[in-house]
Image 1 (cartoon, helix red, strand yellow):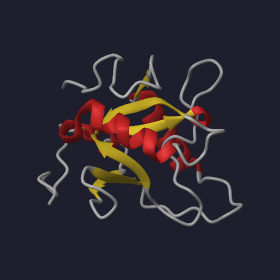
Image 2: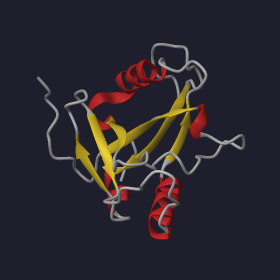
Image 3: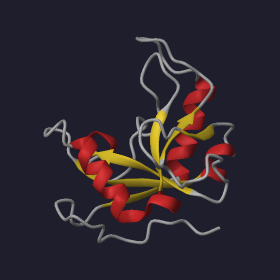
Image 4: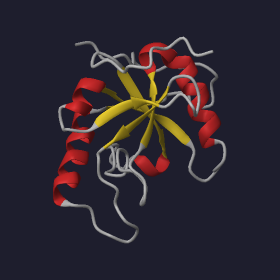
Length: 152
């Protein structure tokens, strides 16, 4: 049973698990962090407000373990309010696991098609609003980095 409310509140912080492919050599978020794959309109995030740092890290490492060439490196943290401020949405998707949610942009990009300029701007804006949190000890079982929860 999942004790997390189905309604995702504006005040919540959600995190996107990051792999090496999401972070530039200069230590910045790449444009692919909040971009959905072709043919779908959903980007997986975790509801940090309820799952907390250690559970989010454990799930992120589990997900990333499928590709040893693209390991887990940390999180992009953002408030739900920030996502909604660019006319994107965050919805609960507990069918995946308790605490899972999706960011959607209400646009499905076909394979081999460029992004619509409006969508591209929304995704870049989300990248600037998100906090990049590189995990200082990615092999550890618990989160040892900076506080993740975003206040106000």
